[in-house]
Length: 228
Image (cartoon, rainbow, N blue to C red; front, side, top):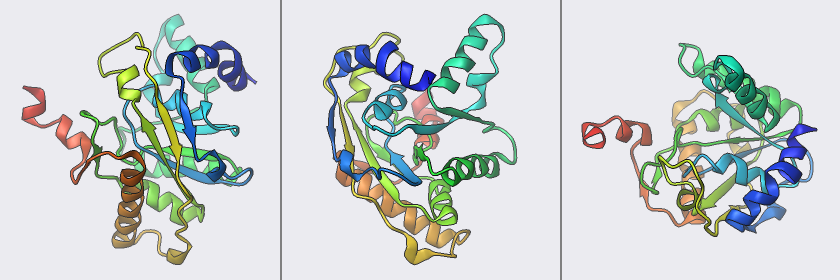
C-alpha cells in the first residue's frame, strides 16, 4: 500500500515534474512472472525513477545500513526504504554474496521483479563499468530472463554530492529480454557467469550509449588518483 502511495501521490508527481522522464520499451517488461532487471547506475534517484516507469512493482537490494540508523531519523529511514521496495542485505560480512543471492531468490520465487545494478556502485564519471557476476549467477540459478535498463541523465538531475535535485529531462529505456536458458545447469561456472555478465553489459552499453570501461567502478573510486 505505501509503495503505491509514494509512487502515485507523495513523491511520484513531484519527481515526474522534476525529471519529465521519457520512457521507452515498457512493453519489454513481462506483465506477470519473475524477471531480473539489470540497470546502469548513475545516481541515487535511479532507484526512484526506474520504478515510476513500470506498472509492476520493482524490488531492489539495498545495504543494511539504510535500515539500522538509530533514533527517530533512523526509524523513518527504515520505514521509507521498506515502503519503497528496498530489501536490506549486509554487504560487509563473509557471507554477503550468499545472503544477497538468497534474498534475490526469494523475490523471484514470488514471481516478482527484482532490479540489480551489475556495476555494484554508482558510476563516478558517467561511463559504464565492468559488471560483477552476481546478477548472472542469480539469473542462471533462478532461470529468469534479464531485462537491460538504461537510465539517462539521472546524474544531471542528482549529481554526486548534491542534495537538492536539478530539473533535467531524463530517460528510462527498457531493452528486450535476454534469455540465458542455453546455460541451464551451469550456474557456478565462473567462465559462463563472466560470459553472461559481459553480454548484459554489452546490451547496457548499446542501450545507454555510454562509453564502456573494463575495470570495476569500485576499484576506481578507491584508487589514489580518485582520492587526490
